Image (cartoon, rainbow, N blue to C red; front, side):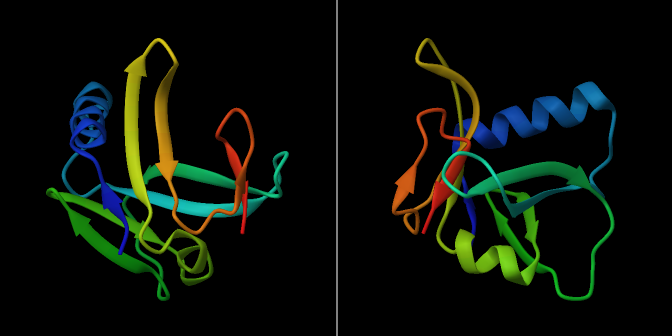
Length: 108
């Protein structure tokens, strides 16, 4: 399962409203090669499902990932912070053995 924090849920709702996109859109998260630690997170709005997608819903938000990315994202929480120590979405990934200083990449 992939989870979403309450703060991230509210930010996603705000972004959907600002972009004037409907409820048929969901959050697509994936893992791609790159970044200082070897793997990076990717996140975007999408409205087209693919045959091997893994779909989850938490706090009323639909989160979708491909099967390969799910191997890295299992039990991960999408969070959002707007504090002084960093603003934006970030992933709390219990599978990561190492992360970079910016939090954008990780290794397992």
